[in-house]
Image (cartoon, rainbow, N blue to C red; front, top):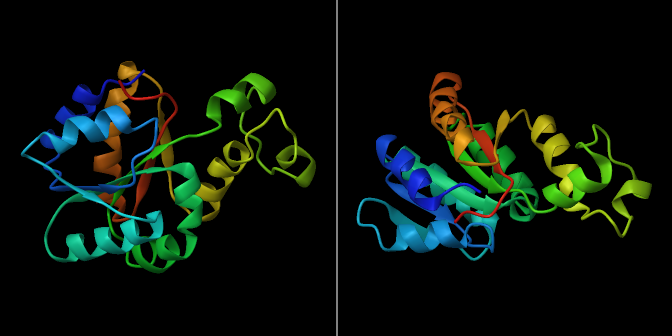
Length: 178
């Protein structure tokens, strides 16, 4: 499980000014830790689509925001992603908690390239899991995985990648933060 304190230290090293998101069970420990920290401003939203517009505005104003949302909210935000951060080439790191990942891996062993109606209607698969990675690929958003603290260098690399590409990058958090 990725440690919230280690993630927060990376955010500080990357000079993150604002964390925008909507807490879920997987990110609860990280949100709780950040709320008590004076170096980053936590900006909660009521819908994830708002988060992308807020991040764009903060970035245009010279701040260094990141997003912390669940994959269900990521998909709910499709038009906001397309119309703001992708189209405007905003170098935004999106920490995305990956609901359904564990169940998908247990049942299928991998994320499918092209989920179909049969797969998405199965009771032994959370339907959000199989559509997360193909959706990010369709939007042209590169992504990597954060499973444990051993993967924290991938989060550091995401910041470098977003800046280099001048585009959003996602880091899929597959376990609850602790």
